Amino acid sequence: MSMLLFTGFVVLTVAAYLATRRIFLAYKYPLLNPVFLSTLLIIAALKAGGYTLAEYQPAKEAMTLLLGPATVALALPLYNNRGVLRNHALPVLAGVCAGCLSTIAAALVAGRLLGVAKGVLLSLGPKSVTVPIAVEISRIAGGEPTLTAAFVVATGMIGSILGPVTLSLLRVKNPIARGLALGTISHGQGTAVALLEGETAGAMGGVAMAIAAVFTALIAPYYLPLFLG
Amino acid sequence: MTTRFINIAWQTLLLWLVFRCGSYLVGILHLALPGNVAGMLLMFALLSTGIVKPALIEAGGGFLLKHFAFFFIPISVGLMAFGPLMRQSGLTLLAILTVSAAVGIVITGVFVQSMHARSSR
Image (cartoon, rainbow over all chains, first blue to last red):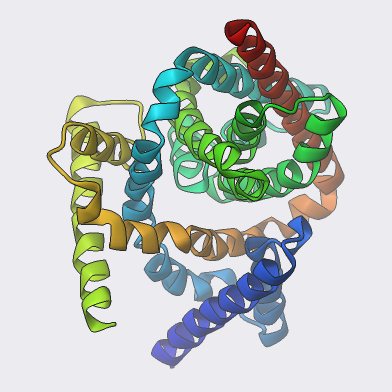
């Protein structure tokens, strides 16, 4: 029975992913984000069938086994864009670091003003970083990794929808600046949008996502406590 | 098709080994760094020094990156556990996420564009 359930959950997840990916690729509309849609579908299916998260857990463990090697594979786009990285090293590094510091500060200050609990604040810290790394930063900092994953996905959605519009309103037209901004704040989802704008923006999104991840991981243990009082 | 599958499989194994090495290094060196980031930096070093040629991991790495989004789906399903929190403070959290995302995007975008304009003048 549990083997059947396990297989059923894996099939459900893969099917939801493949279907929503097709929809997204066909329309390229930011709200049709495959992660967002699949998650809604799967939660609805689990609720409808009366299944709990604990029953889904073994399938989840198996399906995320390759997340580690996938993150290591990010070295590939980073390596392929090392030329752009070398030529614009200072603006790239300074811009990404400024973005990381300011978005974390804004989230934690706003969170404290609105009376958000400490555990939730710690989970908000790494919300602009790609999920596998954000989850680790959150765990090390004492946050709730699952909640962080949710914040990361939501931030990816928000940034990929609002980002391009906001940048255009402020007349930020430089593709390096646009790509870096989207990748720094909205990781892979922002990078996907930057790729739609062009190759340079896309490459910069990938670079920003990697630098933001490393930078945030390095500063989180010292930077997050500054806002917790 | 079969060769492609075999390539993806063993290259993924190679990436997994680098991931384990990264996690191991973080453990023995007591770094405040996730094992997967250490693995990514290790792989970047291997590529930069020419020890690993990009072609050696392109099939497996390309496949994993193409479907990068997939891994976040089972993770996001964990949101189910936060139903009460979302009902209670979903709007507050949405406001925090929107404001902080906008702040970061504006700062990075405007900063890089002005720095770039200055350096190319």
